[in-house]
Length: 190
Image (tube, rainbow, N blue to C red; front, side):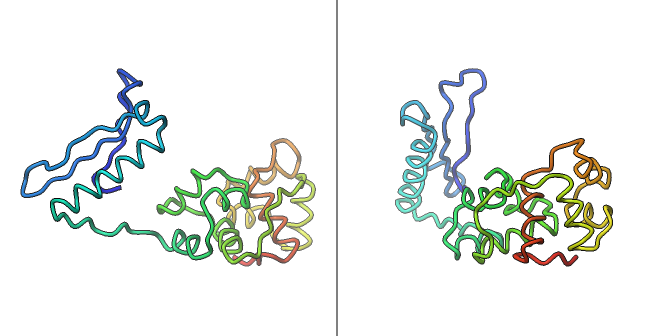
């Protein structure tokens, strides 16, 4: 957010909040701290800071550049979905969705799941697949080797073997992907 930063105040956490700073002609025209406790929560303090920033920008004729959104975020917004809704469909955290939208490395399988969720082709359900199910779908439906599946998922080759043998739990979004491929909601093409 332009003009607003998070101020955690590690030495005194009760003073944590949001800092608004705006400059014009080399001078600060706005420099104010919005404490979380004073506004009864982090999100309310953030909202107050945003309102103050916008008011000060208008008052001092400061043009804030528009925020840049990634293509993923634009797709999600146009579908009317929140990061939390997409995260629930993909069985990941909203923080991971945020990272992907900000440009973090996103495996091809996750990208196809994201696209299917935005287009309304992915129902919001947590599949109950075992490692044996992952192996069956990998071999019978996809016709892939463990290395090919690992590459599509962005995981190490050994991880796929661990999941299939039941030595480690299969991550949530991997279950969603494998289930979606088996049902035909997402193509398994690389």
